Image (cartoon, helix red, strand yellow):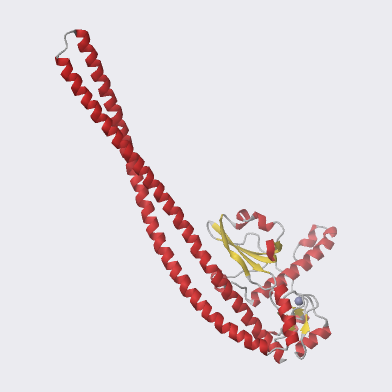
Amino acid sequence: MLQDLQNLRELQVADREILRLKEEVAALPKRVAVIEEKLASTRAKLDKARGAAKAEDAARKKHEAAILDLQGKISKYRDQSLAVKTNDQYRALLEEIQFAEQQIRANEDKILELMLNAEARDKEVRAAEAELKVETAEIEKEKAEARERTAEDEKQLVDWNAKRDGLRRGVDPDVLRRYDRIVKFRGSGLSEVREQKCSACQVMLRPQTYNEVRAGQTVLECESCQRILYFNPENEVPLERTSVTPKRRARPKPDSQQAWFYHPSFGEAGEAFLAFLNDSTNSTRRVYELHTGRQIGDILSREGSFRLAFPEDLGAAIRLNGYWDEAEIDSWGAELPMVVLDTLLSDLAQARAESGQSSHAAASGPASSEHPAAS
Ligand SMILES: [Zn+2]
């Protein structure tokens, strides 16, 4: 293989790693910000509960003062009653005393009510204080981790950038310019040829181009996506498998707990693969860029199974075959492994080919959509 191509392959690895590290460094403060937001909302809750407790305390003091005042009045009326001359005067004072006693009872009721409230309020304050303590500890830990991770990433970035610079010096300037231009527009500049196809865009190569790419003596581009093509003999598929008629595509199970989809226009990302995973109560969504396999955005989790939770994503999407263990999916990090990307792309190509066929066959009746007995 040409040294240029060999260097480009290593350069692609370096470019991807640099991108991944930069994205990770950028994402870390966001994670801290999310917890900080939660912390602020807990603080607000605590302030509110404390404010309410203070207001209720003031109200209780007011009622207590009113009771003292009324008791003073009653004792004054009692003194006056000793000195009255007529029954009418005596009755009038008695009525005043009864009225004051009624008011005392009303104030006592209010105080009791406030005391019951105060218990609930106390619990609220204590719960918010405990929550704040946990979250404060959490944010300190998260910040420390983010600092450590960032420092480690920055160190790796320095190494990778040095490596990248060295590799770039080893590639012909014209080839390098072509590579840079494709990376800019497509996210990746190289594509491996497998089974006579560009593995990035799945377009079939002409036999002569294929042979030249295999020979590895010239720098050739894919006619469809313009990526620079290379061939890796280690991944060569044995002849007997390519020569037989391709196996009929397996139909994805509709009730599966994991489902992969192709989405033709996922927001700014354009073409994308979507992975949905159900667990007992929730479902998650991961989005990957079609050509590079790079993960777009964070993992989104919603309540309910994915069909109910993400209906807006499924309308234009094509269901694909594919199932990987969740732990394995997590282990991929921010980029689909090439072998997974290849599997999805080739299933997509088959699904498209089949839907083309079935639209022709539809006229011949519903039996055409059945699996042949041979499968
Ligand atoms: Zn291509």
